[in-house]
Amino acid sequence: MKTLYIVRHAKAEGQPFESRLTGEGRKQAVKLAGFFEDKPVDFIYSSPFIRALETVRPLAESKGLDVSADPRLGERILSSLYFDDWQTKLMQSFDDFGLRFEDGETQEEGMARAASVLKEALQRPEEHILLASHGNLSTLLLRYFDEQSGFDVLMKMSNPDVFRIAISGEGHVLERIWKEE
Image (cartoon, rainbow, N blue to C red):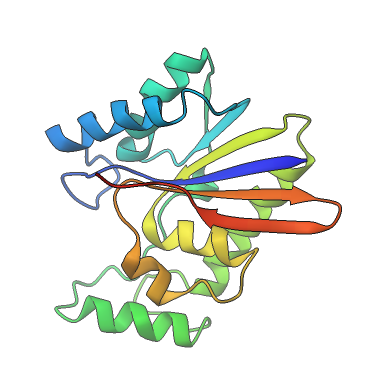
């Protein structure tokens, strides 16, 4: 059986590529490492965004693993423009996967990135693979296994968050396993 863990990064200072984790986010990253203490992890993919890498660094160190930074796990860019009603625009993009805002990526394009990294992960010899990403792209990773994963799932996600997908010959089971205190 193959197990995938989809991890949304811990609390960060902002959205740009170079945004770091907040003080609380750094504590969450350590807590995340403890959460995985009794769970096998054989390989770690991460978005190359600083906040995602900082989220999985304590976990990787505790497991003695390297982190494979993969740009396919980078956050989906909604637009180069700032929208006061960005949540409305984001919801519209989940309703219309081909919708493109200025200099943005469509959900369809984000889904193609998510599918390509998941297909690669499923072909890897390791049995327990973790993929660290961002809210929108994590939702698309989940959507690969459950078409109901969309805007509502994204809005209910926490920072951090963890989902497990257990895959066998009979199918798969997707469940949220992160418990906030």
